[in-house]
Image (tube, rainbow, N blue to C red; front, side, top):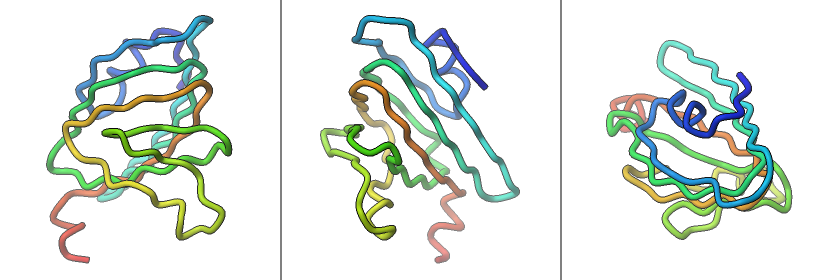
Length: 121
């Protein structure tokens, strides 16, 4: 899906979010979600910097990572940045609630599963 309205984009995901775009220009976001029985995969790309306060479903265990080199996402003040080795790409377990800061064009991905599955591993 493609969005030009940041509020519509925030409402799409399984998250309660409030935020503000803090850059000039036309907002555009692309979002792809794949939902399997017990696993959800998300990919998102945004064109403008933003600051968001989010609350995810506490029954979900999520891992977020960045795939666009040279771009950063900060979650609760901790930087997510792409690593050079595959093991470095899984950078942050998303907590709820959290504060996110995206700087400029950014591409991020996440995987989530019910907490009961995450604890079984």
